[in-house]
Length: 91
Image (cartoon, rainbow, N blue to C red; front, side):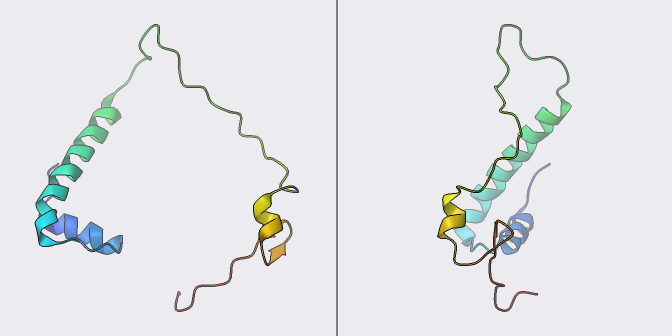
């Protein structure tokens, strides 16, 4: 799937990024390459290469937040969670 200049501008607008006209074609080519690579990954099926150790994963175990530096440094905490004030103008 080739990405065109309009798509680059639309994505930049959604991401609230400013993209100059001189960058659009380069970004379109880079986005096309990324999408092609993701398509290749999506078609892969099978087993990992033999002899290659799979990536180590850590267990997904909840941790106690009692000693969290973030919690202790926060101005407003409720039920062991940091309370963030609303953003002005957000809906």
